[in-house]
Length: 38
Image: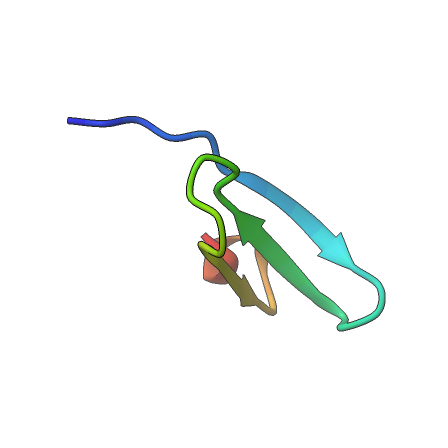
């Protein structure tokens, strides 16, 4: 099983949490809460 680093941050521009996986370009998600973004 592969493990990847996930970076979650608040976007002031979009007013949502954003989750990104640096090792997988373009792999990201967003949500109104930390849990939704994950």
